[in-house]
Amino acid sequence: MNQQTTAPAIDDCWNRIGVSGDQTCARLAQHIHCRNCDVYTAAAQRNLQRPIDAAYRREWAGHFREKADQRAALDQSALVFRIGREWLALPTRAVGSIAPLATGHRLPHRTAPGLLGVVSVGGKLTPLMSLGAMLGIDQHDTPATSGRHVFARLLVMQWEGRSFALPVADLHGIERYAQGALAAPAATINKGLDRFLTGVMAQGEMRIGVLDEALIGHQLARLLR
Image (cartoon, rainbow, N blue to C red; front, side, top):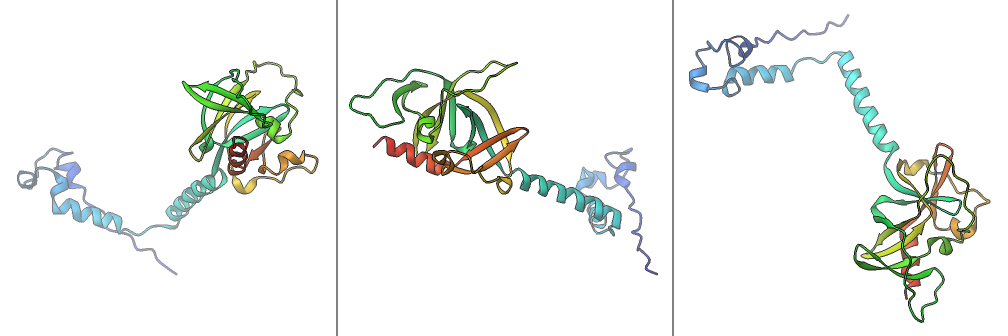
């Protein structure tokens, strides 16, 4: 039968006669504080080297395993918004800011589909682009809402040093999700949108298409050429 070695009890003299006790220890005159004393240092080393029982190991193994699983489960974050009836999301790293909806100023001799003009965002002229038109979304087909006010906004996307102002019909907020848990887009989704998605995120009853920021940014930049 195995017997577990019991570590000798540590004399916590610092709590009796040291700085946390009555301060009658003769060593205090030399060391000023117990943490400078070799007795305190030796006790700390013995405490770190004490045998660890099975229950302690199980408790801490479970603790660190749970934290690691949580980090792995929610390794990405994205800003969720709606265009028409489609709930979409962009990785938060690609979102520069959110601004009030504003009417853009048309650019002469520029008729690229999706390019609405330029708009001032924070005092800076920014290309105003229709993400809905680019993705083939019917922006006039909007769901009925109840119990909350809905406000259209400008989502300012940042990509490779460029900014694009994208009108969105509604904002849901930031959601965390697991990249590995994204589902494949439904077969019935429009093909113009499908090729820009990395997958579909489930949040309650919502099904949110997670956009590929690189593909979106590249296509928006092409519209400006």
